[in-house]
Image 1 (cartoon, helix red, strand yellow):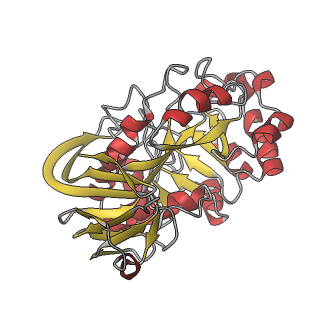
Image 2 (tube, rainbow, N blue to C red):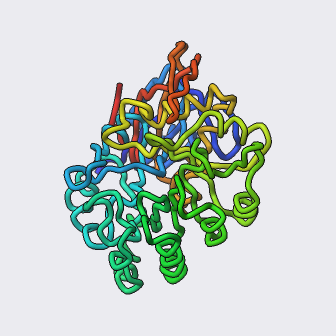
Length: 373
């Protein structure tokens, strides 16, 4: 069988390893990145001229909801994945142990976009409404979790710790998630929102490698005090290696919160969308639209690309993605930055006039073109 040989020519490579942007050709051999000089020894090379577009390792969105037809949030994965230049998406707790096999059979196995998953600590996931942690009897047991452990598409656990989800259960679902995660050596992605429970209860339970999504929401009782200083528990969590994540969503991202954080702190964080059926148009749009907002807020392009490639991959322990390293999987995002003056809103309805907008041009999965504009 003829090997798959591709050269992407005339692009500006955004390298998350070196935080550089330089004009260079990207070589792909049989679905893996290769040195250009190795590929040039062959004939029958497919050359794709990307004409000055930017080229990066495949973008990863750490927080989406794509369990369509079975949850009220579920959206078509390829619509928000490969068609938006995102090669890997991570469903954040739509499915639990009770219905994960259905999620895999009906969605994961039929998607061109790679779908990974945080398993909801509730065995029901989001298939029976959005208060899945209000009944402690619905919590997944350690035995159930161990049965799911070796599923290669599960990368961690999800616990949505806001008042509307836990109701009278308080901090108990997260305490249980901590016990399960420690048994399985899994990270926990924790959704934060309106208390109870308060962050002063949540953050002390988190360990190195756990993820706080919606970290920059604009609600009261967030990571910043009224004076704009980070609360002690958030600072301590970051210091011990807890990861913060944007998780834009319908009501979970504030320009003001991120601007205040950026002005005082230099901790890394990942960028994700929390995109689903009802926020696809507004306020979220796509991963690239979310990145465009952060670009306007002053984050450099190469830093933003690192947040959705290498940093995202590291967060969920992916060793074969997020990099141009020779021999790693050739998932590729090709995009352009167009001039415009589009007004984009955050989850608070605040407007931001974005002068530069990221737009997808071409998406490659394992060396093969799966979307072209």
